[in-house]
Length: 229
Length: 304
Image 1 (cartoon, chains in turn red, cyan):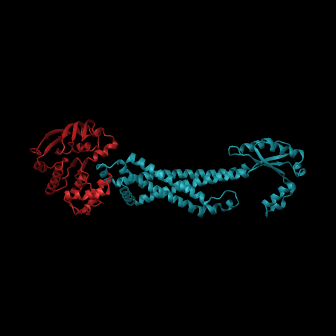
Image 2 (cartoon, each protein chain N blue to C red):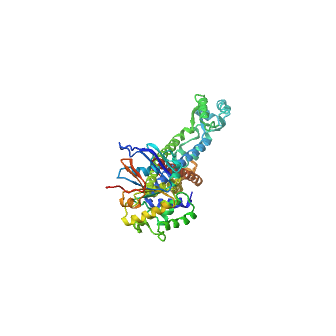
Image 3 (cartoon, chains in turn purple, cyan):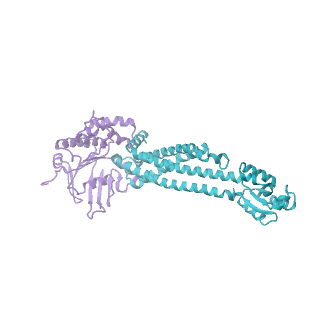
């Protein structure tokens, strides 16, 4: 599903590579934690998968697409296969909950009929049915993140990337969000989640890919965050 | 492409940026108004020139002795000149105006003025009035040929080319046209920069939307189209305002300004049809300038 082959990413402003010969393979339906300290390369990893950036060397495949060599006009096709969730939710403050989720479908040209059918379904999946007409600022942080997840998932992507999705949430709410991501994972969606949260990683016991200074220092199935960290 | 989506996004964009939108519309309107004025000036000047080229003659004034002696151009000197002129391929027609006819025309021209009383038929020269054939839209060659053939001839006092008299008028009108166009150009540049800036601001204020659109895989067209449509709408509204401005200007200023000379047939009047045609040109010009500027700006400065 996702394959990185000796991927190196250099930024002009830095002498040290952000990613250094990283090779990782992630299968369809896997749930992978991407851990490591700030600056270890987690965000670069996710940015490269989304084609926000191209690697300096190496190649990246997401499903059948060669990401680094993808022509610009085909980038939307890649991004329609990937859903994205962030620490800061990135909801549109002037649109309702339903409007935010519908937006993701409208901008890729889905018909009004599809939008009307699919949006309530996905809101129900994330546990927000009945709140479609609320504005984002009327919701708690956890609920806002659910909206963001609904938006990321509404187009049924093959991969869900989550960059510190629980970073702004208290432990209980974080746990709820993790349950939701797990549920999405069970539908067959591959989930890659960058996080600092020890307790979450430890309680989930999923595959852990640990980055340090741009290198993969650990890649372990059913792992914990790490002893003494 | 979902048109309702684009329409909604455009409406939001225009409303959110309302002061910028108004500034953009006004600047576009003013620069297009200038362009329109320039176009009208060109049209009027062209019409004036063709009006005059039909009417303008070269006049060959005869010497005093010939003028007195010959009242119908039948005597050898005048008849010789007449046939020389008539035989030239550059000459359309020649008519003879004797002293008495010249006097009558003089009285008519200066009726009520003291010179009319002072003039006597004997003090005015008889003239051969030469109408020229147009070559390549100009009678310049004919005028030069007549001058060359007639000057220094016995019986000829002087050759007067009426086109030289109105040349300074045309120079003036040409100057007006050039100044109008120069101002329009500067204005258009200002409008261009303002459109570019507005598109950038518009994209910046909607960076979250644009970010989300990119992430969920909206195509470049989908992301850019609302901004482009916004720019084109302001361009078109600007053009419509400029058109209305031209019509108002016609009735409020141009008509009264040109009333005297247009009535006398000195220059052709600026008709409503002229103004409307010019306004119709401004519409695609406005839309095109705004659209192209918006597109280039999005490509160069805005990551969408």
